[in-house]
Image (cartoon, rainbow, N blue to C red; front, side):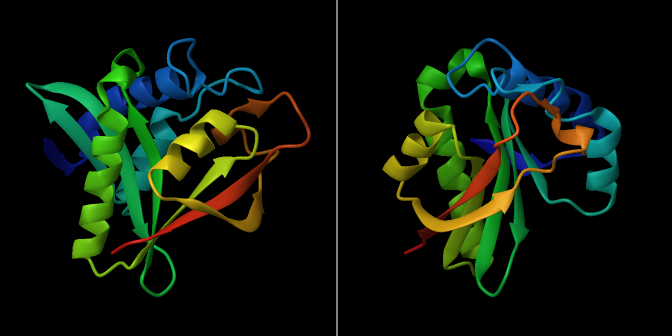
Length: 168
């Protein structure tokens, strides 16, 4: 598994991968039924990386297989976001390998807890994370209505649930 910090040169492929995985028709984790448009735009991701977003890419033989961001949150908690794998290879257990790598990286940075947010109606994805040891905290966070960097929602009841996992 070859994971490295993303560079500006990686970003066009990362954007294509994330938009395909989150808003495409392939894969089981797509959001297309309730959010239209891109999940991420190149100029926004370029700005985030330039501002210090810790974004990591997974490449094998030059091919981009996945990515994730990992940010220190509060205390010894780290937030994992943008976890994305090639939808055409989701049945190869790439997601669980990538998530485990993110958790190990966080552990090596002193984390004892991981946190993430998932749109409440993504039952299959929440279940997948629960099978990896994440639990719902009961906390919710608002969906960024009016901020088209996340796409255009087609419903007015979207919000995020907070999931966490204690790291051994």
